[in-house]
Image 1 (cartoon, helix red, strand yellow):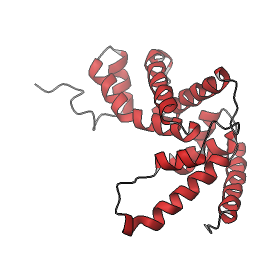
Image 2 (cartoon, one colour; image 1 turned 90 degrees about the horizontal axis):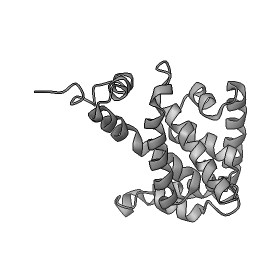
Image 3 (cartoon, rainbow, N blue to C red; image 1 turned 90 degrees about the vertical axis):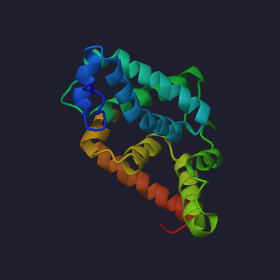
Image 4 (tube, helix red, strand yellow; image 1 turned 30 degrees about the vertical axis):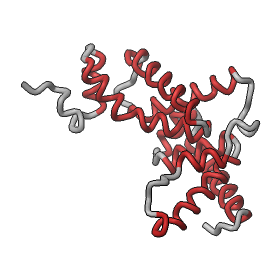
Length: 195
């Protein structure tokens, strides 16, 4: 006997949301499997600390499921979840009374955690060095610039989705993204990387 959720790779997020809302535990598990890595990566990219990112992602997933009743089915799940992750990150910063740029994000540690070290070192050496350089530079950006770069260039969210996550107009998304990319490019050039 095949359950409706057994084919969770084929089910849309909307179908899974409906099933999870109806109390189907399998649908909740399928949603969690589908979106937990994205939540973790966003938290890691914003915080630069794997343990904090795991805690934030777990809290965000719990909040995601406890607020399922208020989810607007006309929207996509990922931007909604990313909004929760972003709020959890900000709550963590407030609890610690730290702001981005106060040493919470360590560019070297972030680069080490986000770079795949299992690749063939000879074939991928330049790519690894470039990734490390990029993540070191991203870690030096302000919170607003870092989060917009991460949402667009690493999670491939649309301008509309970014506007929803950040609660800003689309024009502001475009101008912030332009400024963030310009600053990132300058930082990479300072570090000897021409991108």
